[in-house]
Image (cartoon, rainbow, N blue to C red; front, top):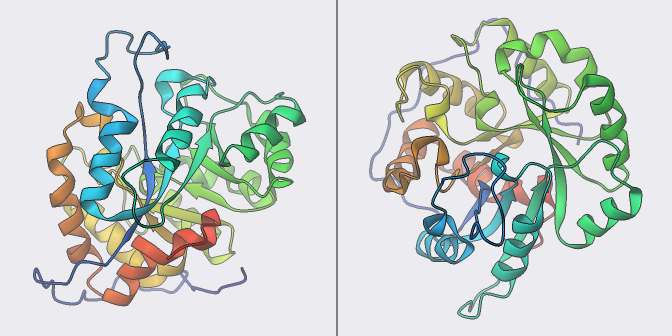
Length: 305
């Protein structure tokens, strides 16, 4: 901790390095954002109850990550299960023991928990591989109040957990003081999930960069289509945001596949394109290695490279 990345200069964007479509793939990857769904008779869905989950199982993810040479994974609790983390915990256990595994693989989890969950249950989750808690703070969605979030942030910090903060990035400036008051690191998935027009000069983005500068925030490069008005994989505005973040603060970025792309109805055919786009968004190979491989060890306490 204590890095200075100086986002607050007058000119955030500078000319990008030329995109080289022939950039070498990394030897291994750390997927910091994936989700698993299980059989509905074992894990009843609290949302989208008619969803067919067979293609989103731990078994299918194991095939995917082996194909992509992913050696570290962070599973995030899907919204479909609310605070019932059973599927998440079972997936962590089953993937840890994948019988065909020849090389080292590590997996952790981000759980969604109730604000008054007992300390013993928090410790149990930690012992089962959970390293963070999902805070749902988006307007109009059922989640934590800010008073509950303030208290819970301190409780989970005692376990060394991160806060996975789900908020419309356009609103970050309104709650920046709350976030700064929390101990430990706060992780913004999906590039901050900006739901309104985003530029490097917008108030929400400026607040996000201040939080990064003050060693408070990390950002996941995942699901860029969520920020695109047209659901595009390679939206120009989103490209500029990723490029700006990668240029100024590669030490505070991690990468995630967002497998199996539930927001795009499980369209896993886009995975190869998204992987290739990282060469365009982050043309510097050293920075790409930080984001897609090495930083995960710092943020989530993995012990393999």
